[in-house]
Image (cartoon, rainbow, N blue to C red; front, side):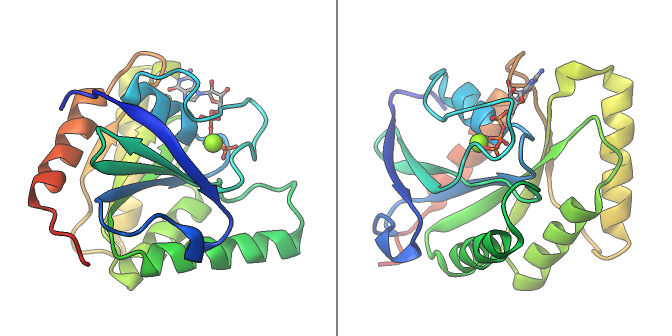
Length: 202
Ligand code: GTP
Ligand code: MG
């Protein structure tokens, strides 16, 4: 898929203010600083489209980006961001979980996982929750440029193995680097395939 246009559409703190659910939508989620916003910029080839930062907690809202006038990429705040207060974190969780459970046009959740790390409890728990809710998701390993391919492959295998303790089937995975544009074609092709089959829920 070619990206002809990519534009920021809106930021929301409330799910009742989101754009009408008539276009296929893909949400990026994962721990703070895992590289969600960077990946959106890499896919769209628009450097400053989604705000990135070395400081975790940069993305605080649900941000919709309209791509090719016919589908949305959604940048979500990271989970596990320690600096937000406990109450804030609770609210964030409720809000995001509500969005993920109820958004009719959401086609797939991209769970971003830092490829440098051994499986992290918080990422596994989040995948289990998605599975329980029956929300379709795929695994996207980020920052693969930061270590050897072997190390990345080992961490991917460990993560999949941890998931297999609970799931019979594990979702598709993608290995990416926003620095090196790794995984771009694969992700766009995956999205394009779903877009073709999309039928508006309303
Ligand atoms: P929050 O919005 O805070 O939840 O973070 P985020 O997940 O959106 O992360 P963001 O894209 O802002 O990236 C965090 C940091 O990681 C930035 O300093 C990026 O430059 C860096 N980064 C992201 N992706 C990659 C990558 O593929 N390779 C390398 N080397 N650095 C990356
Ligand atoms: Mg971000």
